[in-house]
Length: 479
Image (tube, rainbow, N blue to C red; front, top):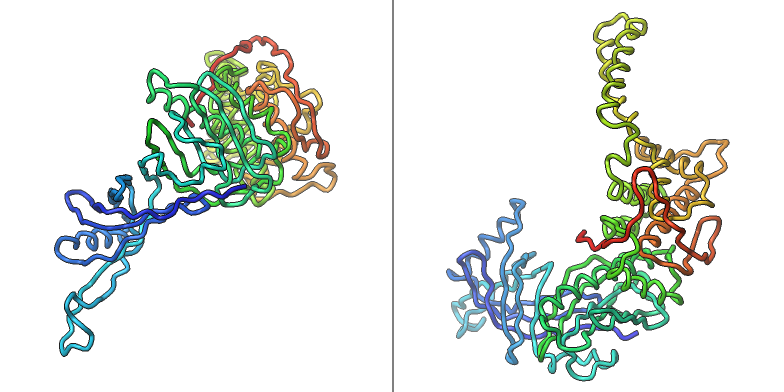
């Protein structure tokens, strides 16, 4: 797969903070990992530029002043960034102009060539002067409007494509990119023609790409990097660069790299016509793909995803056994019983008070449904088939997670037939089936429950419950 980068471009402009401003020359380039590199040409540290030193010194006080850097090239490409952090000034003493080291009294001046980091920057330039990197992607001239996210870490043997109301969506990756920290693919949407409102089209296209990006990260079981985003419109291109950590790797993808087209089509379709109304889907996916070096952390993150889906998509009434007023009467009676019996447990009044307080605090847990009950309720409401997952497996996984949280490690019981890996696989399988259901996916996926295999997934008919029933709706969230 072709590696993408942007050769350094020379800019002239200003580096400023508050009311202070310095004229600077600098270059900006993007490497194969999508990391932006800003290099300043040395300039004198004098009365006009002394503010750089005074603000840089604040770093030692725990503050990180953010500078603004703007500039233009000779061909009028423009760079803009308002979050420049200087990591070093790189001071150096050089001979002043007109002096030589051999002079009897050579004169030296102090120059600086700051090293900088930024989390987000924008470059606007002519699309016709764009890097030739687009040739391999089949671009022929300008195709406004087009939104392109450059990706890394995405494995797909086939080029993926799907049509939608916003245009044609395409996604391309390599066949050995999992965990490789280099730009090697892209997610692109091209409008079928000139939209009535280009800004509104861009906004909707960004939201669609964000949704597809999360779903395909779920499919890969790794948050795919997308550090470069390009927007082509008329004869210009806006390049946005985002600082991203190194690409993570997954050994347990949900879909095989040879079979990504069905889930890709589902990702695009589910944005416009979601099968189930769901809250915080992106947040759940981010937790699901979170890398863990230990099975204990994998169990905690997987269970967090499950509990987040439950908490975000069941109401308070769903999760309570009794209404608040009814339970309050029960709590008062239970509290009265404790006060009557506590004198039999201890003669010490302070200890009696402690018993009463601790037990009263625990009574509130009695009004909440168990995790198993809530899992079952949401599964019936959405139409998630859990018929082949024994309830005891889920309960054991929950107890294992609680043990890790409270003790800091997992200790398998001598007579237990299932270990920590089994518990992780069970919870992971639940999460996968819930997410596939809300996406409306039907087809093949990779299951690790009961051994590694390709499994057919089909959503079952949602069942109305006494607390409500399934209903379609939008799940576009901003998490």
